[in-house]
Image (cartoon, rainbow, N blue to C red):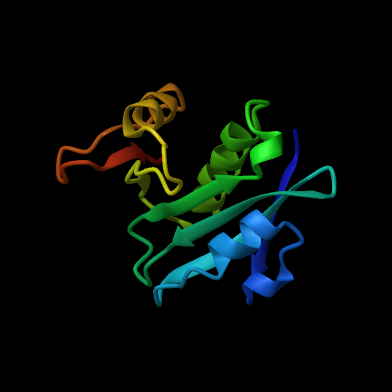
Length: 133
C-alpha cells in the first residue's frame, strides 16, 4: 500500500469532517500537519514534530478515518513516517501512545505500536521509540 503525506497548512484543507476537526484542534510551533493519502484517497490525519536539531521525529497524533480502520492504513502510515524520519536524518522515531478519541485504550495503542517495532524508551517514561540507523 503506497502512502503519500501532504503537508496541510489549514485544517480546512481536509475533505473528511473527522480529520478536519482533529486538524483544527491546534498546532504547537514545531508540529507539522499532514493529510495521508492511499491510492489518491484521503485516509488519515498525521501530526509530526521534528525539532530543528532533528534528533527525533515524533508522531504527535495519528488519526485514521473511522470507516477505514482495521485494514493496515495506520501501519502503512507509521512505516511512511519512519522512512521520512530516516530521510530527514533523525536519530529516532517516537510516540507517546495516548488515545485522542474518547473510549480509546492506551493498552491497545501500546500493543499496536509494539507490533510495529517500537520499544519503551530508557530515557522517558511513557515514550515508545525506534532507534534509527
